[in-house]
Length: 115
Image (cartoon, rainbow, N blue to C red; front, side, top):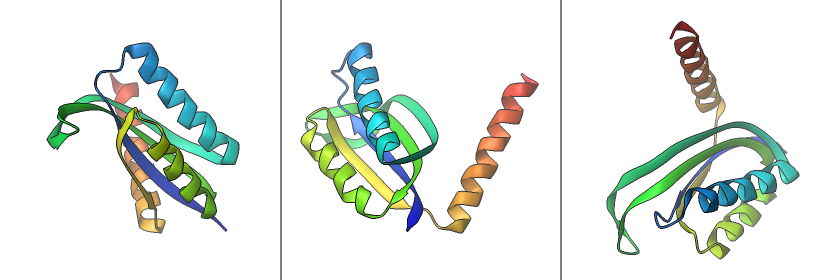
């Protein structure tokens, strides 16, 4: 059964811009090969609430996608294998989370049009 998921990962802050783009493209391709990418957001370099691997900042990136449930284990295994990824979180979106996400995207699009 195909469900909608949202995954956020934090990449190490020592990456250069090309390395970060390469990492994002790697996971983007992995998701599109196994499902359908719905939305993507680059949150950039942010300060973390607590240090991870003695680092206080990290590059945050979000993917919203539709895929089979079995794919999530494969995706999270790929996150664990990549030394550039410090943390990740993937969760299944219920109908309310999907509706909220769509509403939020529409509001952002209308905001961009008005500017």
